[in-house]
Length: 282
Ligand code: OOG
Ligand code: MG
Image (tube, rainbow, N blue to C red; front, side, top):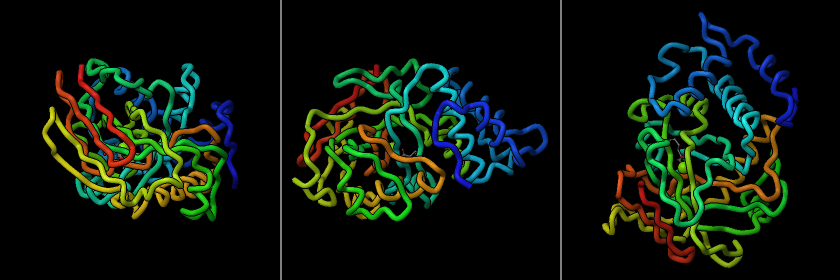
């Protein structure tokens, strides 16, 4: 059954999402309440699945959708999507071998050069990301990497600040899906290229903390090619009745493991063709 893809049907979708998802006193609404409160109150908590084993992947995506609907009701705007756990480095670190998608809102965008507001975050980590800007709508099923790339109008080098609402970043796949894939902030560098002008599987990045190189990888780390991640997002969102919109941003997933962002410390990512970008914890 196809669900409504609009963001104005909060009540109807909330009601639908409750069906069959209650275990004890846990409901999808409560999952959203608790994760929303942790984010707003800047505290971490134990995994929801410790108490609510009924939080399976499908239920978790309903919670994620409801969470972003609540942000939209609070005045935020959806600006795109992110993929998580698309590289082996990320999957191994988190102990989860499946990618996921989540929502980006305007409140998550850090302007160029802006410090990361540590007082608003719990335990932020930074990871390098290849960022797409979509020139047209894209909706699965059946989207290949080649088809996905034709909808990309620009590619940028960027970073994401992840900030799990779970203590010590300990979570299962449904937990992290419900937590909007730890999304917190993101930013991009000054270089925007036509994707036809470079081979993203060979695009290299160096991650530096306070000037010291701590990690390196190439775009091939992301599903073989970041276009594969974009196709994956279009297809998995399509299966849930959503489409990627023209003008949206897509973060294709951390290329390397993430590093903690500490007060006064800077994390820089230098890309081979996509310039460099630095974020400082303040
Ligand atoms: C989950 C989010 C992962 C990525 O790019 O892999 C993610 C996490 O590691 O907390 O954003
Ligand atoms: Mg990421």
